[in-house]
Structures are given as C-alpha cells and as structure tokens.
Image 1 (tube, rainbow over the protein chains, first blue to last red):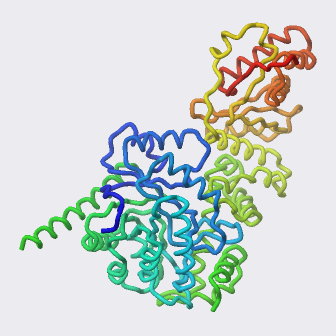
Image 2: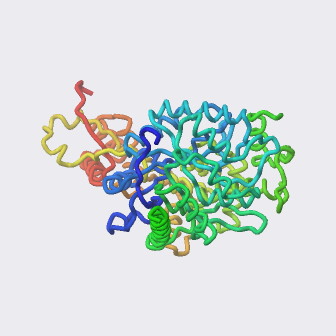
Length: 284
Length: 264
C-alpha cells in the first residue's frame, strides 16, 4: 500500500450548474462531487459561493482540463497558481487532470490531445508531473484519455506508458473505464490488456461515461447514458481493482439529477455484486 | 524521428490551419482512415469553441439566427485561436470583433448586444465585495460629506451604446420579437453590475453617467456636486447628486467610501 493514498469516497457525480439548486435543497444519494477546476477559477460570485456550500456537505475532488501536462510548451505558472488558490479554498480530496496536452505556442485547443508513447514523451511527462507535484505540494492524479489516432513512432502501449508515468513520477491514476473502452475499440487493443497492465495500487478513481458510436470509431462525447458494454467493462474493472471511488461523468445533454443518481445506483449495484461474489469466492 | 515538440506543432497546425503534414505521423486504424480519425480533432476544435461562444452570447445568436451567428463565430474562431487556459475567457474579444468585422460592423447593435452579454457575464462571476450600505454613511458628520470619495463595486462596468441594443436584448431575453435596430439620437449610458448574486444592468442619464465616471476616479462628493451643478444647472444640484448616490448605494454599486484628509 502506497503512503497517503486518498480515501475511498464511494459513488460520486460531476457537479453541474443545472443541478445546483436540487443538490442544495434536496439530499441526493451522492457520496461526493467532482468539480471541473477551470469552472471555478473565476474571481467570485454565485458559482464559488455554491461550491463553498457543496464542499461543506460533501467531499469534493478537483478535475482539470487545461494542465496540458504532456505539452512541450512551458508549464503555465499563472494557471498552476490559480489551481493552487482554488485547491486552498476547496481542500479537495485529490486533484486530477488528463494525461494529454492541449496546445503549444500559447494556444489552447480546448481538447485532450494524444501523446506518442515514446521514451522521449515519457521522460518529458515524468519531469513535468514532478514539477507540478512540487508546486502543488501533493500528488497529482492523471486520467487516461480517449484517443482517435495512434502515432507511428510509439514505442510502447498506452498502458505501459501510463504505468511508467505513475511509477516514475509517483502520481495517482484516474482509470476512465469509458476511455479505455473507446480507445480499445479505436485502436484495436484488448480492454483486458489495459486493465491488467496498470498498477492497482496507483488507481484512486474511476470515471464511467457514455460515448457516441460512429461505426468505424467511437467518440468520447459524455453526452449519453453509459452503454451496456461499458457497464460490462466496469464490472470487470471493479472486480480487478476492488473498491475505488467511482463517478458518472456527464458533460453534455445533461439530464435531470435523478437520472444520473439512477445511473450511479447501477454502478453501486454492480460494485455490490462484485463484492459479494468476491466474498463468496473467499469463503469457498 | 520527429521530436515531441515538432510532432505537437504539426498536430496543432493540422487542427488550426488544415495542414496535413501530421497525417504522415499517424496511422490508419483497422476500420478507418487516418484522415477521418484526425478529422475528429479538427471537428471537435471548431465545434467546442462554437459551443462556448453560443453559451456566452445567447442573445447575439438569437438576434442573428443560426446562419448569421455561425458566420460570425467561424470568423472569430479563425481570427482568434484560444490563448486561454480557461474557456470562460475565450470569447472576451467577441464584441470588438463584431464591431470590426463586416458585415456585422455595419450593424452596430450586434457588437453592442455582445458587449452587454459580456458585461453581464463579467459581472456575474466578478470579484466579491461587501456593498456599501446607507447605514455606513448615517453617522457621518455633515461637514465630512464634501470630502467623501467612493469606491465602485468591483463588478461595476460602464458602457455607452449608440443603438437600442438594450431594448433588443431585453426582447430577445424574454423571447419576444425584438424592435428594429435604431441609432439613438444621443448615446445611451449604462451601468452593469452584480447585486445579490444576479448580474443586472440599468440605463442612466447623461448627468448621472458623468457623475459616476468622475466618482470612480476618486473625485470628492463636494466636487461632484459642483460638477452636477455645472452640467445641468445649480437648482437642486446637491439633491440631484445625493439622489444618484443613494441610488448607487441602494443598488449595491458601491463597495466603499472614505473621508479624505486634506481639503479639496
């Protein structure tokens, strides 16, 4: 067991403005919330006030989209400063972002762009994660992204790359179940190879989400309910890793809170079945 | 082997400029060609930024309709690659862009509707500050009033419009037919700010606008009263100035005041 591993939080949702009122006036069966860091990197007003109220009632984790950890552009110290200021206010259980880059030469393409899995990229990312962790004074959590292209120059698999980053930079991993499924389909690898290829003791969070199937490829749109195939892979994932904080991630076509809570209950049910099955096996 | 830096530059050029050099670095999948797969990134870039602008400028969208708004958005995205970590600020130059870009530049109300929407957004999540209350001034001796200076609420924004953009905005916001665009006989001054966590705006007259503009520069209340007298006559000038001031305080437009030490 690695030192200072973040606590298991149960089953959470992404905090979205459409649900603010219902969350604060009701008592939804949600164990914790994940907030998009950038949405609260603002001077003041209602969103920050609501975030303060939410964090008084629920554990909160921060999830960023602009760290650009794999970019060859210099680290953005203004961004890191704003991230740290927000973290000081929110006191999140952990801070995550994506194992990707978002732009170079001062441009932000507002997308999670793929990395070639090379020794050069590995050295670069490991060094940058170290710098960010030193700045934030805590371990970072990095998420595997969905990708649509592979690079001819790649020298290792994605899971080998992810694992090496986690071990060498000494960071945590956010295992996005849907992203593994999407990338496995797009690039023709086995989800099981990915699942068994990453270090179990590094994984602190799962994302489960929906996607758009375009027949020849899948796009990670987060605008649909989780599909049966991803639920099946979630079952395998939960079986392999054991209890890990799990979150339903929906960024578009956001349904009423009750629908997401229902999806979350489905995740709970699967995790319960996995646990009971493991207990039965252990007893036999 | 292409370095990581070169690869990322090429990838970015492939998205921003349609440069196909990057296609030499990526592979076809078993089911799809690389052009289609890389196209996912190209399409997502424009779609995501258009969505951001659509959220930030809902009434400009409603006013121009889908086709007109898409044209303006496409031109803006092409001219302004995002340099912001936070998508919240991507559209910050949209009003000026609309004013400067044909054919929208010929329709001044478009840029002004955009300016109003931007100001409302900026006020909505602008810095927090406790508003000045009437009670804060209640105990102030009468002789100190001329030496009072005021600090505006940090969310307060002053705009001046040449058209009836605010009327158009209000109609669109309430989903009714907007009036025809018009050039106003005199420019219309506006104040935009946040009160009780809501972004609001209020048209103000020329005299009040003059007094506001001077007050936020730190001009003392005694001098502001003299300026009001000069602007529209001495008759009840102090009362007019006090009325404007009370209106600002009641609306949460001020965040503080202080009595200056030295005589004016």
